[in-house]
Length: 97
Image (tube, rainbow, N blue to C red; front, side):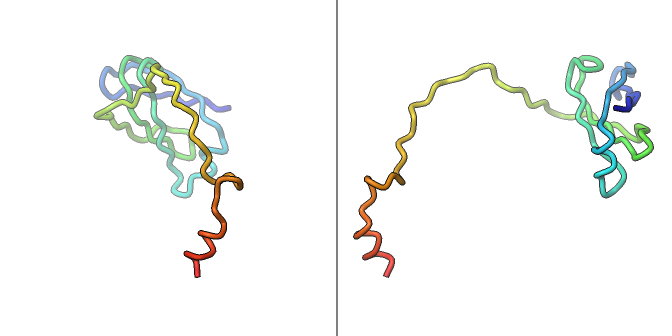
Protein backbone atom coordinates (compact mmCIF):
# COMPACT_ATOMS: atom_id res chain seq x y z
CA UNK A 1 0.00 0.00 0.00
CA UNK A 2 1.66 3.26 -1.10
CA UNK A 3 2.13 6.11 1.31
CA UNK A 4 1.46 9.75 0.56
CA UNK A 5 3.01 12.70 2.36
CA UNK A 6 0.41 15.29 3.35
CA UNK A 7 0.62 18.65 5.10
CA UNK A 8 -2.03 20.23 7.30
CA UNK A 9 -3.18 23.48 5.66
CA UNK A 10 -3.60 25.16 9.06
CA UNK A 11 -0.55 24.29 11.14
CA UNK A 12 1.67 22.99 8.29
CA UNK A 13 2.53 19.77 10.15
CA UNK A 14 3.61 17.00 7.78
CA UNK A 15 2.57 13.38 8.07
CA UNK A 16 2.10 10.28 5.97
CA UNK A 17 -1.06 8.39 5.08
CA UNK A 18 -1.53 5.10 3.30
CA UNK A 19 -3.96 4.80 0.43
CA UNK A 20 -5.03 1.73 -1.49
CA UNK A 21 -3.99 1.60 -5.13
CA UNK A 22 -7.50 0.49 -6.10
CA UNK A 23 -8.89 3.72 -4.69
CA UNK A 24 -6.72 5.83 -6.98
CA UNK A 25 -7.23 3.58 -10.00
CA UNK A 26 -11.01 3.60 -9.62
CA UNK A 27 -11.18 7.39 -9.74
CA UNK A 28 -12.73 8.52 -13.01
CA UNK A 29 -11.20 12.02 -12.77
CA UNK A 30 -7.75 10.94 -11.64
CA UNK A 31 -8.09 12.75 -8.30
CA UNK A 32 -9.33 11.35 -5.01
CA UNK A 33 -10.52 13.39 -2.02
CA UNK A 34 -9.40 11.91 1.30
CA UNK A 35 -10.67 13.08 4.67
CA UNK A 36 -7.91 13.34 7.25
CA UNK A 37 -9.58 13.21 10.64
CA UNK A 38 -8.40 15.20 13.63
CA UNK A 39 -5.49 13.68 15.55
CA UNK A 40 -4.35 11.66 12.53
CA UNK A 41 -1.62 14.09 11.46
CA UNK A 42 -2.34 16.93 13.89
CA UNK A 43 -5.25 18.36 15.87
CA UNK A 44 -7.03 19.57 12.71
CA UNK A 45 -9.25 17.76 10.24
CA UNK A 46 -8.92 18.51 6.54
CA UNK A 47 -9.42 17.09 3.08
CA UNK A 48 -6.51 16.34 0.78
CA UNK A 49 -6.85 15.80 -2.96
CA UNK A 50 -4.47 13.13 -4.24
CA UNK A 51 -3.83 12.56 -7.94
CA UNK A 52 -3.14 9.28 -9.71
CA UNK A 53 0.61 9.86 -9.29
CA UNK A 54 0.12 9.82 -5.49
CA UNK A 55 0.88 13.52 -5.16
CA UNK A 56 -1.16 15.74 -2.86
CA UNK A 57 -2.48 18.43 -5.21
CA UNK A 58 -4.64 20.57 -2.93
CA UNK A 59 -5.97 20.84 0.60
CA UNK A 60 -9.27 22.00 2.01
CA UNK A 61 -9.92 22.91 5.61
CA UNK A 62 -13.29 21.60 6.76
CA UNK A 63 -15.73 23.86 8.53
CA UNK A 64 -17.16 21.06 10.64
CA UNK A 65 -16.32 17.62 11.91
CA UNK A 66 -18.64 14.64 12.18
CA UNK A 67 -18.06 12.62 15.29
CA UNK A 68 -19.53 9.31 16.26
CA UNK A 69 -21.38 9.47 19.53
CA UNK A 70 -20.39 7.08 22.29
CA UNK A 71 -23.96 7.21 23.58
CA UNK A 72 -25.95 4.09 22.80
CA UNK A 73 -29.52 3.37 23.68
CA UNK A 74 -31.39 0.13 23.48
CA UNK A 75 -34.57 0.74 21.56
CA UNK A 76 -37.51 -1.61 21.98
CA UNK A 77 -37.65 -4.28 19.33
CA UNK A 78 -40.07 -3.29 16.61
CA UNK A 79 -42.97 -5.56 15.96
CA UNK A 80 -42.89 -7.07 12.50
CA UNK A 81 -46.21 -6.04 10.95
CA UNK A 82 -45.61 -8.26 7.94
CA UNK A 83 -45.90 -11.56 9.74
CA UNK A 84 -48.32 -13.86 7.96
CA UNK A 85 -50.53 -14.54 10.97
CA UNK A 86 -51.05 -10.81 11.57
CA UNK A 87 -52.16 -9.83 8.05
CA UNK A 88 -55.78 -9.89 7.01
CA UNK A 89 -55.37 -11.17 3.45
CA UNK A 90 -59.09 -10.79 2.65
CA UNK A 91 -58.90 -7.08 3.49
CA UNK A 92 -55.87 -6.68 1.23
CA UNK A 93 -57.64 -8.42 -1.62
CA UNK A 94 -60.69 -6.17 -1.26
CA UNK A 95 -58.72 -2.93 -1.28
CA UNK A 96 -56.39 -3.84 -4.13
CA UNK A 97 -59.14 -4.44 -6.69
